Length: 158
Image (cartoon, rainbow, N blue to C red; front, top):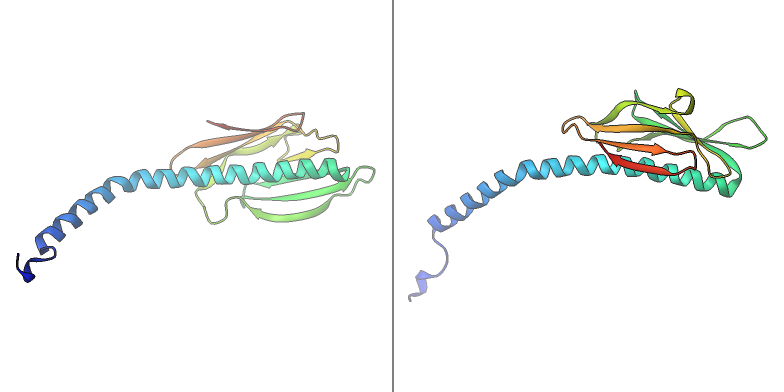
């Protein structure tokens, strides 16, 4: 073997790049679908986590906590009120649902007890009944968050 025979030829490099390009072209749609699904799950978990936190704080602080959803701006706000007083105080407002991922939308308007777009957690750990469904516009996948009267939050795929 001579000293000049080491390394790869141009033909070998082109073949390797072509194979890599074909594999990337095949994997790209799967990765895109996976990423979209992750964004949807991320949005649902974010809301579920905030609902759970509101429930815990309602019990710990002996106050009512309410999460109000705005379907137009895809945001929600958190409010609280002491039990004997009837004045709601906003704790956080304009919290984006999955910030920067515009393809996540409400499949239908959130609907909780009394047909309102807010869920209230009480000091005993209970909450209003209802659900909200998020949808990824591109894939059409849906996930639903449901609250029970016992304050439990359930996530289901549709």
